[in-house]
Figure (cartoon, rainbow, N blue to C red):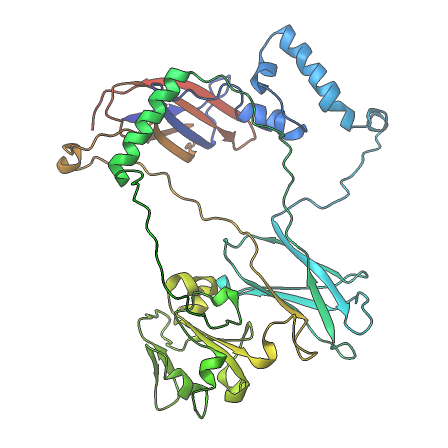
Amino acid sequence: MKNKVEITDNYGEPLTGSFSVSVTSDREVTPDSTSNILTHLLLTSDLRGHIENPTYYFQNNIVSAWALDLLMLTQGWRRYNISDLSQGRISLPTSPIEAGSEISGTVKSILLGKPVADVEVTVMSMKDDYFDNTLTDIDGRFYFRGGELPDSTMFIVSAVPSRGMTRMDLILDEESFPEKLLPAVPHADIDKNQFVMYSHKAEQKYTLEHGVRMIHLSEINVIAELKPQPKRLSDYYEKADHSITEEELEKIYTRDVRQLLSRFPGVYVASNGSINIRGISSFSGSSEPLIIVDGMPGSFDMVSIHEIAQIDVLKNASNISIYGVRGTNGVIVIHTKRGRDLSKVDGSVPFHIKTILPLGYQNPVEFYAPKYDTPEKRDAQTPDLRTTIHWQPDVKTDNAGKTSFDFYTADEPDSYTVIIEGMTDDGKIIRHEGKLFGNNER
C-alpha cells in the first residue's frame, strides 16, 4: 500500500522536518488516546508525578483551560519564584546539562588517604579506539562526560603516576540511574473482547513462527559427579575459547610465552616468532593478535614465563567484539601473578588502574516488515497475523513538504489507524491521526 503525505502550515506553506509513522490494526489495537507528542513535550516532561489523561488539558474549551491552570498551580508554577522572575533575577541550573553517560571517581593517596588534586586521569576503550584524559579537581574528583559507546564496552581508567606521587588509589563511582517517579501503573480502560482477540492472534503468530510454546516432560533425576572447575582469575574472561590455568602451568615446562602459546588449539607460532590464530580473518593486512597484560595492552616482552598465572585465548566474535578493530585478529589475555585478585594481594598491585563495563547504548533494531515481492511469497500459505502493520521512526519531507511511505497489509481485511508525529525544522510540533482501509492484498 503506497501512501503519500504532504505537510503544510495554516497558510498552505510546505514544512520540512522529521516524523514517525505508525500503522496499527483497528481490530485488535486501540491507539493510546491519553497521551501523544504534544502532551509529552508541552506538559508531562516538565511536571513531577503521574498525570492522568494528559490530552484532556489540550481541549479547546473553558473547562479544560481551567483544569490546566489548577494543574500548573499545584505541580508546575510553584517550582518558580515568580517575584524574582518579574524583577529579572533568573536562577541558573546548579548542575551541568546531562550530555550522555558519565564515568567519574576520586583519586586518593594510599599513604595519607587524602584526595589528590591535579592528577592526570585517562580513560580508554578497545572499541573504536576511544581515548580521553582530564585532571582531578581540588577534591581529587574527575569526570568523563558525554561518551556514547555501545553496550558491553569495557573502559580502562588509570591515574597517571607523577613525580613524588606514585602510590595512588583510583576509586570509581558506582553507577546510578534516574529514580522511578511513577508509583504505579496508570489505570486504563481496556476493551476485554478486543484484548482477547489480540492475545489470541499473538498466540497464533508465535506458534506459527516458533512452534508449540511449552512442552511438559515427566520428572527426571540426573545423577552425576560434580567436577571441580579450575579457579579463574577473571570472571570477565569466563567464556574464553581456550585457557591454561595456574594449576595446569605448574605441570608444563616451557622456555617462553610463545612456546606456551603453541600448546593452544588453533594458535600457530611461526619460526620468526609471529603468532596467528587460525579461524580469524583480518582485513587490515596484519595477522598479529592483540596482547592484553593484566587488563592493559602490552607485549610478550613485558612478561616472564615464571610470572604468568593464567592465559586466555579469545577468538569467538562475541568475545573479541569489545575490542573493536584492534581485536580483529583475536586476543591473547595474560594474567600475571602480581596482577591477580586486586583485593587480596600486597602493595605491588596497581591500585591506580581500574576497569569498568557500564550500561551503554543499545544498537537500534530495525522494525521487521515482510515483503511480498515475489510470486512465491505472495502465494505462501502462512497467514500474516500482524497487529502492528508498520512502524517507521524517521520519515523526512522534501522542500515541498512531501514524502511517502509504503507497506504490505495483513491478511484480514480491516481498517488501520495511522499516526504521524514529529517536529519541523523550525520547531513546530506536528501530529495527525487518520484512517486507512486494508484490501487484503499482497
